[in-house]
Structures are given as structure tokens and as C-alpha cells.
Image 1 (cartoon, rainbow, N blue to C red):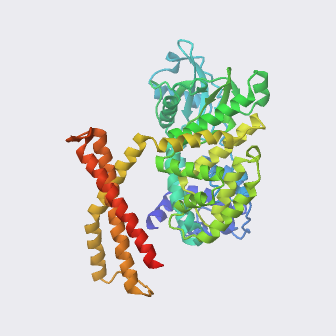
Image 2 (cartoon, rainbow, N blue to C red):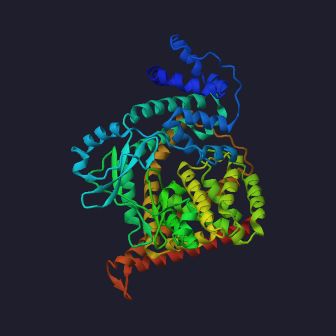
Image 3 (spheres, rainbow, N blue to C red):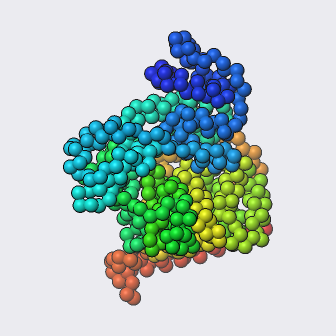
Length: 561
């Protein structure tokens, strides 16, 4: 907290601006509760800070949105990120955050030109022809100008706005301070971890400020879509691209929200909707690397019903375990599998204590609402929103890497339905879900998982002595307290012993199967009947162990009865 106090002192003029804007928009009580106003008044009476902090805190999404717009680039970006947090905010807040735009007046070209010359190391006229001084787009971080290379190739230059970094860095420091104040003052906010949100937002925004990182994102999508002629990703010209400048091929075509232009160009709306959905679902479920902001402004439609994706400043990453969870959830939703949905949601609870019985009941009620709907009548966005609403009611926080995904999928469905009112997102999901599930049972995938499982088992067993030693030390210090109320303790101990024996035998059996499979694959050692002897013996022992386990469990069951 002391470090953050020094941060406030360092950025005092900017904090004053932020407080003044919040007060002006009727958020004075929030300023008081966070202690921002008191801190400033104690720090300096010379700032002439507005003294009216008695304005009633109006719980108004519109006022918050207007305040964020007035506060500038970092706060606008924060609002856009919060628009993805459907697990934190009700629909009316999300709708208002979605209205936040990064469009700002452009920087005059006579201020851009010296910056561009310094970045290129030469007069831009030596590299580009017809450099248009009027930008085709101006946002809070960068603006875009069209030009041509000396060979006539059309390109666009995305140039970072001069002087934007110091102000954004100050805002990021202040946002982290506000996050820590929220955790301290508002107990109900702690489960959302405001400080962590501020830190992740800062990391994401710094990546977006680095235009060469955006170019690397673009290159990865180029590699992922090799052989997909219907998907276009702009080419990056690396010889001129840097942290402050991104030079890419120009993409014409029809804007994603220009439906009249789509019709005038003779493009097929149904094909465009289908191809766009398949492309994004490939990014998500197959590649694990997706465009996190596929709104109409970042999509162009080209002759031959090709689709171009633009602006890769915001991307999402999904590791294999997370993709498996998503596929399991989608499969459970498609099959109306209540237990499948429950299992995935429980994996996302983290440290939150959940009433499983009530959650199971709510899932059953949720699925009942969709039970009699035909596939074509199911709105995937509504389905996801209902799942998130249920999570919010049970105080389950959506993992941060899934907030972008859910938002992207909902945006994608909206874009698809704009093109084709009969567009069915669920229908496009099904083949991808099947492909991922089938891939899990491919021999190579199973062998890889077996090796990983064996390695984890060895690591677990190897770490047991150390963990037991720590437990004993804690017990000696009196740091362990266990409250138990047990009946038939002797019987309970016997059951634990039996269970431990079976668990050990199960691990040994599993290890034998995995090890024997590996030996069979590499065909090492002496052979018997054309099979590796060690592998054959391993399988025999595994079968005998399995028979012993089955018999012991059956006998134990009879004794219980």
C-alpha cells in the first residue's frame, strides 16, 4: 500500500483529473469510499480540487460509460475489456460498455511525418508513393494511412500516436491502485480480484501498444490458415515494421457491417456466414489461438466470397486443457447432459465453495428451458449468457482466458445472423466438437497422455517422502488441527487400508499397461510369439492384477451387505 501511495503522489495531476471526471458524472460517493479524494486533499491544497463529493452515487451504466469515454484511451480500453466480463456485469452494463469507441480525432500529419521519418530512418518518399495524409482510421493508440510501395503494391501504415505511452502508463499505475482500494473497501469485489484484473489488463494493453506484437499475431494466423484460400490475412512487411509502426498489405472489399454493399457486390450471405463461423471455430477449437474481437469493423468481404480478418491487436489463447473443457461443455450442452455441465463448472470454481446440490438443480431447470427447442431455434449467444448468469448466481467467476472467448463467440453469432437470419451457430459447432473428441482417442494422443500420466505418477510417488516429512514437521509444531467425529473407527480404518491397497494396485496395473504399451511400440528386448517378451509379461501381470482387484471389490461388497 505504501508503494501505491507513492504512485498516487507521482501521478497526482492525473489522479486529480480522474477524480474530477468521476465527480462530474455523479460518482462522488465512489470516490469517497475509495479514499481517492481524501488522499488528494491531504497531498496538496493547491490543486483546487472540486469540493463537491456529496453527489449521490448513481448506479447508472450510462454515467460510467460517459466517464470512461472522457477519461481517455486506457479507460476506454478498460471498458471494452469489461464488456467481455459477462460473468461480472448484468446485460444492461455489458450493452453500455459495448458502446465505447476508441475513435478519436486524428493527429495532424505534420506531427506524424517526423515520427515516421525517424522510424524508417529515411524520408518516407524513398519507400512509399502516394502516402495519404488523411488517415483511413484513427483510434486511441494508433492511426492508419494508405500508401503504395515503389512497385505499386498497396499497403497501409499503422502508426502509433506520438506521446501516447506516458499517459497510458500513468493510467495503468492508477488503475492498479484503484483495484487495491476496491479489494480493501468492497469485500464483495474480492472474488473478482480487481488487482489481478488491473494487472492482466495492463499486460494486454502494453502488448497492444507494441505494433510489432500485433504483426507477429497476424503472422501466426497466416501460418494457421495455409491452404484455406477463402480466408485472407494481411501480409506484414517486416523490413519497416517496429514497435511503433506496422506496415501491411492493403485489403479492400466490403466492410463487415455493409450488408447493402455485400448484395451489390453479388456476394452470397449464407456462404460468408458459414465460412466466417468455420474460420473462427477452427481458431478456437483446433488452433487454440483466436481473433478476440471479430466485430464487423475487423472483417472484410472479398470477391469469391472470401473473408479477410483485420487488426490482431487483441487475440485469445487457449491451451489444450482449457480447449478440452470447452469441448466438454459444448458437448454436454448439445446432449442436454446435466452432469457433464456440472463437472465443467465445478472445474472453474477455483477456491469458491459451491452448493453442488443447488447448482445441479439450477442446471436441470436451465436445461428444461431448452429441452423442447429445435436446433434451429437455439440462440447460442443466449445459451452462453444463461450459463454465465447461472455461474454469477453461484458466485463462480469465469476464468479470465474464457471471457474473451465467450464474447468472441457471441459476437460471431451476431455477425452470422446479420448476414443470414437462418444462421445456426450450434450446427457449425457440432462437427468441430466431434473432431476434437475423436482426436483424443487417436493412438498417438493416447500414448502421449499415457506417458504424461506415467511421468506424473512417478513425480507424485517421488515427492511423497518429502510431503510426508513436511506433514510430520507441521504436526510436531502443532500446526495441524483435524476435527473428526467418527463411528466404528476400527471398521473405518480397515476400509481405508483396503482402499489404499486397491489404489496402489490400480496405479501399478496402470503403470504396467502404459509401460508394456511403450515396449510393444518400440519392440525392444527378446521376442515371444512375435511379441516383445517384457511387454507380453507386463500385460499378463496387468490382467492378473485386474482380476484380483475385481474379485476383492466383489468380496468386499458382499461383506458390507
